[in-house]
Image 1 (cartoon, rainbow, N blue to C red):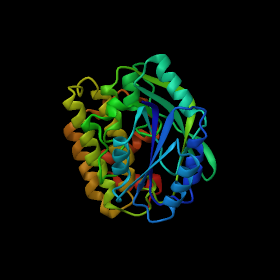
Image 2: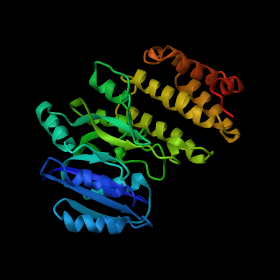
Image 3: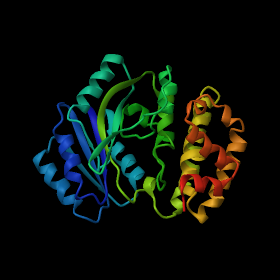
Length: 318
């Protein structure tokens, strides 16, 4: 068995793919494979994949499929992965040359099923450190509160084979839909302080949308899917505070700010408020929320009270 499988979904990234693949084929680790999944990309990405496969035949394992989106490509790549551990890398990102060695060494030393490193946002050529979540002394709670990205996590393949943990296909916000629940299937989790993953922030992504799209509403299905996994594992009550905070962060705060600039987003904000009233009516007493700053709390409270015009003035939203 290969020690590590790196899964890279590819779609329309011909200008960025070489940097990603260069970081993967030049690792200071010698027992791994890179599964590159061409998700029906219409550009010249396949030519680049073929070039790297010829140059690094023992590392690059190319796959092709019809376009189905990021989640579909990740799920497809996992079917062909031979590694004991899995690492997901987006094709416009790159990793430190020592990432695989450091992550694997940590997993062995600490007997961990999941290892999480820190991530850097790359914005206009600048590296910006990401706050990976709220610190909690309990590593499982800390994991749930962590940045939900799948890409900075080194995961035992056996965990990912549980069907309920497959990435939601045809949806955005795919990571929040199941990544926080990975910990429910792990015996031990490790955090390391190294910044090993470089996340390229690109204009036009769903996370940096400048025009309204119904895809913003995928957050509702994603959080509902996550909650159902915790309920199925009989872990909702145990981690209620953490789940409540995820709803505050990804609905009441972050998603509402995405809906706020658009007239079409008003029904979604109303939906956010109804969900919070139904699921977490005492959300303002959440212990993690209480640690947030004044501006954060103002946003949440004004959204919840639907004082949207006042909030727009404060935030200078058109």
